[in-house]
Structure formats: C-alpha cells, structure tokens
Length: 255
Image (spheres, rainbow, N blue to C red):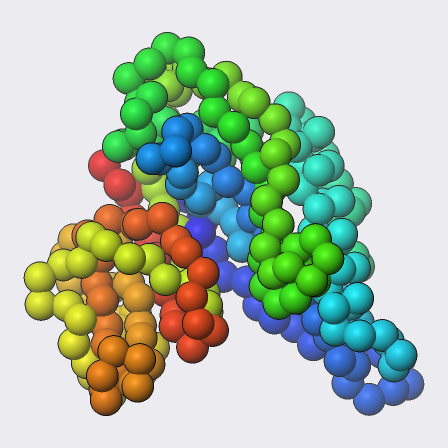
C-alpha cells in the first residue's frame, strides 16, 4: 500500500552468473504507525520485499534470516535518513535484494498515516505516535523460527491540524497480498462468488464498485464449496491468515 503511488512488489528470481536459476527466499517488510491500541494503520507505502539467494548448504530458515536482516538494515537507515529522503540508503538497493515499494520519504508517510481521516489524533496539534518496523513471511522472517517480527523504532510527534491543512490525506494505494485477511467493514452483497471465482475477479469487482476500498478473496473449501469475495467499505487492519487467502486495497482517498 502506498500514499500517492501504486504499490506492487514483484518477486524476482535472481540468476547467478554461469549457473541455473538460483533458489531464493524472501521476507516482506513494512513500517507501522500505532496511535493507540484501537488505531494501528499500516503506513500505506510498504510491503516491499527482501530477497536472498539460498546457498546449496543453506536452510530456508537461515536464508530468510539473511533476507530479514537486509530488510531491517534498509528500514533502519530509512528512518535515520527521514529528514533527507532524497539520500536513499545503499542498504535499500536492489543489490541487497530489496524489491518493491520502498518508503524512502518515511516522515511524510508516518504523518499521513497518523493524521488520516478516522484517526483519534486527526484534530490535535501535537500527539505522539509509535513507529515500528515489521517483517513477516515464512519461518525465519521473525526472531528464531517465528514468522513475524515487530520492532519499535521511535516515538514521533505529529501536528495533525497543521499537516491536514496543507496535505490531502488518507490516500491508500493499491496492493495485493497473499496470507492476509482484513476482517470487517463488509459491503452489502459481498461474500459471494464473483466472475470466474478467481482472485483477479474479486479485485476487479472492488475496482468496479463505488465505495469499495479493500477486498478479501477466500478460496473454495474455506467458507463453503465456492470461493468468496468480500468487498470492504474501508481498509480494516490486517491480520495473518492461511496463505491461500488474498487481500488487497484499491487506490483511493479515505476522505
């Protein structure tokens, strides 16, 4: 998801010189803004990917740990560089396996996420939010053999009244992620099979319906014999789900 831009990460296979296609492992990565326990939006820029070549004697878990560390190094340096986002950290370069929508202008993204419509601090002059970096995916993307790791980065003070007076807020970019559910905010008439029952048909149904901002596709056999397409009137906070469930957002302005 990205403010003012399209978010799609592309999983690219890496080729070793003079060799066949190499095995790769990956961890997804993004920043989070936490305003309160009841309001925890994604920073809408994220879900970039850290890829790593798996050596012949290396386990997938060890490979993912390296990818996780690459993602963390990228995000740590993005935060250090927040006052000069044009200086893009070398740790975020494709040579380090980083692919997708990298949130270089993290200060702007944090402010937009924290002060978006619906935020409990949208009308406040000064409020403190907490910024986290998060990696998730297969075993090894978190500490030890865990699949998720959230690490506190910093407190950050935002002046939402000032920010909202000069920015068009609430822009949520397009995304499509496997293994993610966004429960709640279902529009009437959703939760049925649409088109040919595919993920693409569900995404297209959201694009065609006025007021649809997000969607979740559930494969056959999970909620009945047929697939289900849940269209959302907002972008509910996501949670991990079976890898066969796919959720996405439609680019829109939340205002």
